[in-house]
Image 1 (cartoon, rainbow, N blue to C red):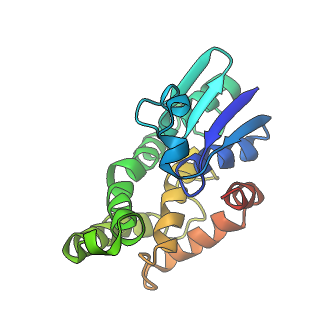
Image 2 (cartoon, rainbow, N blue to C red):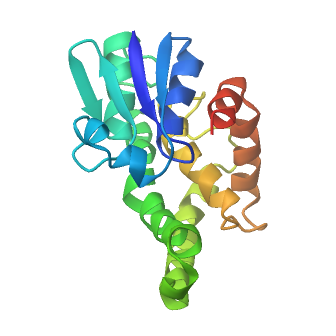
Image 3 (cartoon, one colour):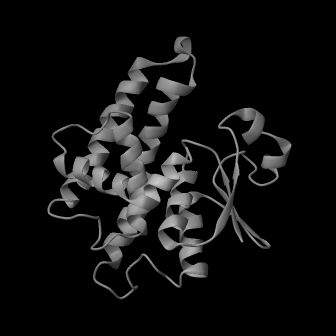
Amino acid sequence: MLKVHFAPNSRAGRIIWLLEELGLPYEVNKMAFHPRDLKSDEHRARHPLGRVPVLDDGDVRIYESGAIVEYILERHENGGLKPAVDAPEYPAFLQWFHYCEGMVMPPVNTIIVHTLLLPPERRDEVVLGQAQRLLSRSLAPVDQALDGKDYLVGDFSAADVMLGHACFMSNRLGCVSDDMENLKGYVERISARPAFQTAITMQ
């Protein structure tokens, strides 16, 4: 059975969401989002930097949320939740699948560090402001791409799991402005999905 090493309020939520959408059986090793768990010798044996998610599948161990999503789709769903390689939507699927880690999550990470993780005396308002502005610029193309659409690429896909999770986090941080109406509606739609609700309640 697939086993997800998980900590709340992390990218590991994507993996639970995906597994729920696919109806695949899995078990969870839930850890605290705290160095005593994530930086323990036990978990560093799974991930050298003490990060989550990590997926165990028999003799296979893999980390990085995007890699895990692709692994699950190819090994356990025969390419489900993504367009065929020769489909017209496939290039856009790839673009948005990888856009979250390339463009959205770097400023999200900085915002979290300078609002939640660092003690107040070490937070930098200049760095925080730069990250918030960069995040707004990074989200603007997503808002435009969602004009007239429910999801990023046709029907719900793994691109929505990847980028949708990042958009949900951005909105929760207060970084999706009210004028991004398409993005606001998108976050509401993905948040209403039962599989997403299961993943988030595990937070």
